[in-house]
Length: 417
Image (cartoon, rainbow, N blue to C red; front, side, top):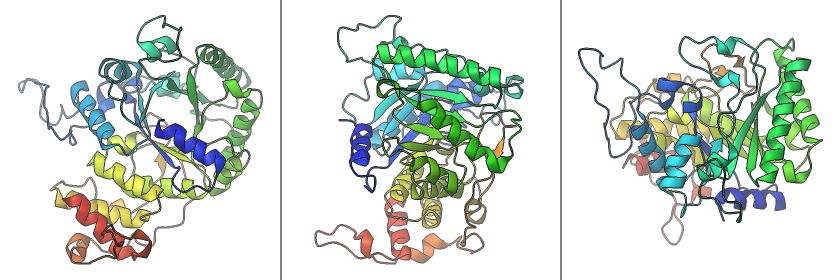
């Protein structure tokens, strides 16, 4: 059984289960951005492969700073080998390369998934104007191509060589005709998915244009639209879980308590600071979320494997978001990696863009101010490396007995090696 299914089952049996939090790495940006999609070449896999060759008389080093597909695939292989995420979301093309051809998920607990639609509000190509228009439904990928890599799958069995989980996104605009078309397309997809025994999770974006709804009321509009939509769907056609914008604790708790059989996940949005990501996961989980699905936050990290490991430690309540930021910077220092921001800047909360374009809507997340943001701990690593920590009888670290400083020292030293 994949960890996704095990954790969903555990959650439904006991909503208080602490070890059932699901983390997804969204490696599907090629469905939105084009050349820039795969991220800057500042982080590569452990093999440090540089298969791309560029002409210096045409390009400067800074101009050609983006990863190519082979480098991107190497990173995905590395994250799958690490084994700390539960879902790997990819485009249909990347899914074909890694799931169908290489079969890297065959012996892994990680569930492969593919983006099943790409509505126009993710068309973030350079010099395009698509993002300024109201979102319209569209699908590039077919379910058959995701499941088996060809137009018509062999359906004599329920086993498929490709992914059998997809992300389907909808964007409610508070516009009668536009929302009707969006839901009609969703209805058509659901019926096809049910016939083909294809599982999906539902991503719900905020309006990508002015909806006439004030920002402080948007959480109410989105929650009501989600529940109204799902009320007309029988169990066989319902999403496995939801992926939504975090509008703060009030609205997260409101939708999570509505039906304990419905697992709610939070989407990551733009990269932001490290503290943005760590605190978002912590607070969303605190108020009922069972999943975190981060794409740009992971893909733009200085060291993706370390970043993911701290996400998992936060999800398991082994370290606080503030401690994790300090420890993460200690890891970067230990590995000789220059951080994108100073420690003090990386401990700040920023307004997050929840759209794919750089001019997308900003969402103010209701989180109390970080009490550590003004403290100067730039030399944290050197101060804590000599701190000891309590251990179990078998020598394993005893996280329950550790102080915050001891947890920080343990994780900084371990991940810096």
